[in-house]
Length: 291
Image 1 (tube, rainbow, N blue to C red):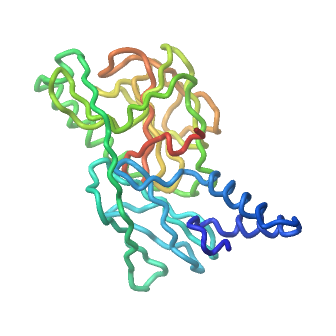
Image 2 (tube, rainbow, N blue to C red):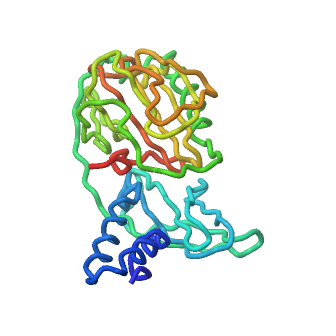
Image 3 (cartoon, helix red, strand yellow):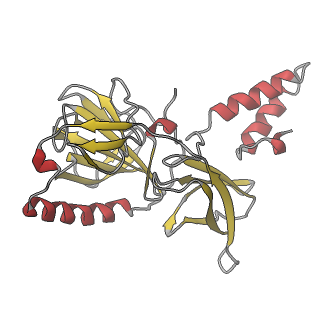
């Protein structure tokens, strides 16, 4: 029964089914399997800006998986490995694939999956003109900052995370802003690649998972910014901060405060911009949160 389930976490399902086998009906094991499916994080949503969970099958060692040129997070055990792959917002609809190296010297294989369509809304905002039509010195600053952030986003470290269910980093209303096609002062710009959470300036921001601080800075568009590394290419970013109470190298526990909400950078008011990255790809943070 468990082998037919689409989820790769068969060990847990088998243990739960064994524990339920003493019950007099078949309905209980099926209910347990559905509960286990609902508890897998992040939730699979193979759309642009979403996450694909790809079963890699059994292997004595952890396979190495690449999505394009970027290493992907692989979790599991020799019974069943799973690749957790971030899908770019710019990904075309249709077939995509990852490459899998099961062991050193073994030939690589491709695992294909399909990216489904998702329509994101459009948002029109009015901001300070200098943050849309950049002066030469501001453009030069932005280019320097972008090059630095590309280095930060390439971080891929161990140990790998053991629990991917995240805590919301600040209390407040979650905006459905991820993926919005944004128009600033009438000019189209890149889609919104994070979740905005309404909160007052000075509200403490806490780590959604254990992590290490890998970048602290004040950037032209993002304002006060902190990046956390959770292992295996899973990163998170926090923007528009009024205060950063941490420094590079700090190790944080889940739920530990490390910065404060603000209204710095290109904003229309105080809020937290929270981004989550997998394999150098920004994905929807809501997939890591309980509904």
